Amino acid sequence: MNQFAPDIASDALSAFLALVLLAMSVASWTVIVYKTWFLRRVGTDIAQGKAVFWQASDVVQAVRALQLVDRNAVLTPLAQAQQQLMPNTLGTQGDIHTQRTRVLRDALHSVLQRLQWGQVLLATVGATAPFVGLLGTVWGIYHALTGIATAGQLSIEQVAGPVGESLIMTAAGLGVALPAVLAFNVMGRMINRLEHELEGFAHDVRAL
Image (cartoon, rainbow, N blue to C red; front, side, top):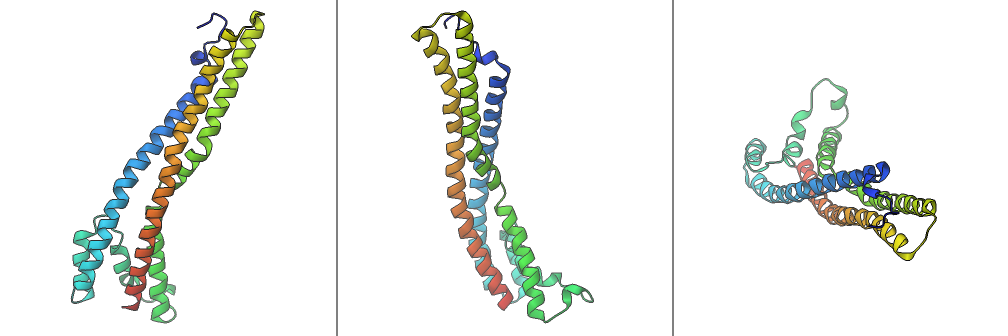
């Protein structure tokens, strides 16, 4: 490296931004790997759980059979919702259909929140990582040009080296953001499909 080029790796802000991008990458990939496994497992549980539930002779037996295959407890809270009605409380005011609708809605929202876990992080990483990388690039170029101006000499070799190193931060930001954005979109579609299946099951349980 040219003697007038600044040592970007030793620059405090550049090092901090690089660590931020690394943390974003680790966090997003952790969510991607876990949610891929989790959503596929939930999809299997829903298919098996619905089958054993409707094959049972009564609700009590159906809930017991459901608990054996519902490993992530996504259908069980919906099937047990009617058992959550406590007598002599405000929750039991009104007709029985209103009560069951309320407890089923609350149980469904609780399950859906679990399915949505990690989506906010993926969206945040996908939206902010390019700007973190861009900030590192701008700072690196500014730092490099300041060093060149202080040296009092200018040549293409002196500019190309530090500017090229600074642009790596932009590439790193895009490299962190792209997997997060793709995973957010793909998993969003998977979650929507699972939500429709859960809403259909909740509707059928209410009718039951």
